[in-house]
Length: 344
Ligand code: GLA
Image (cartoon, rainbow, N blue to C red; front, side, top):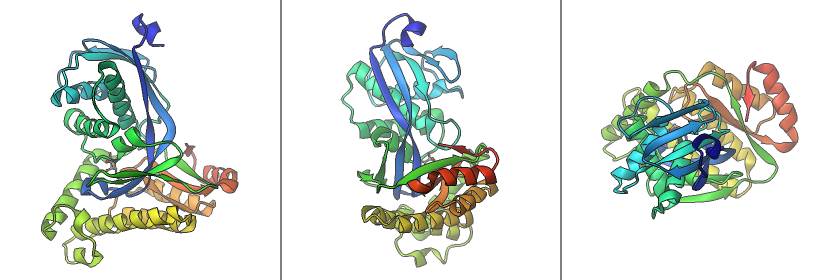
């Protein structure tokens, strides 16, 4: 494939998965806890050494190239951003050619951009023999996304793409960046149901929530909402800060409890925490949509142990925890109740 476009053999090959977040939403930029899981969908790159960036993406059927320069608002930015961030970090990397293949759904909140950035950094690490760990790559990818591409984000997606293994969840403390793989109990499936509604106002809504959280932390005199453990502490804040902070504080507690539930095989409890997370995201954090609420309701009626919106919200997908023996009826009933649902 690489050879058919560039007329030479690739010198490196790397890949990274998309992710779904099981619990811990809008907590990463508050230095809190998250529990994403890598998906069995991946972005795979074949690469070769080159000056500047040249790439062919199967999904778009187009070849693009550029010397570095500023971001231009297209898909090549994600690859150019990885070159930019490596140079910022002091590595004299001239560039690369990439052939990009991916089955990570785009625009559904499953982190196709983090998968692309992390796969590109892995390929560049191999091409130029860079002394970087997978955690280093996650940090660099996050910096590329926020400072070069210009999309503010936490570190969850990039860590899940760099360090996650499909079939396992990844518990991350986003303050210390300590992480641990968590094996999911047998007998359940993690099902993603895409509402098919593109994320509306996702970027402006996301940035607004971040600012509200930072302002709430400042009012409480803490460096981040992560430091607030007593739920009562937020009650005196003016609205909307009270509800925003209440979501973050309660969500951090849910992740820690969810972790214990998974470790002891208590899937009913984990499911209940997912449902509580959705309610908090809907009522306190106000990032849900009628479609996501409807899908969560349908998923629970169709036999899921738990369901919630996943990712930033404002559209995109839900994640449901479904006993394997109910999978078929689950899918049938959700599809019958919601036209256009897509299952991953
Ligand atoms: C997006 C961001 C993540 C995280 C989630 C919300 O996916 O990229 O860093 O903040 O939203 O939990």
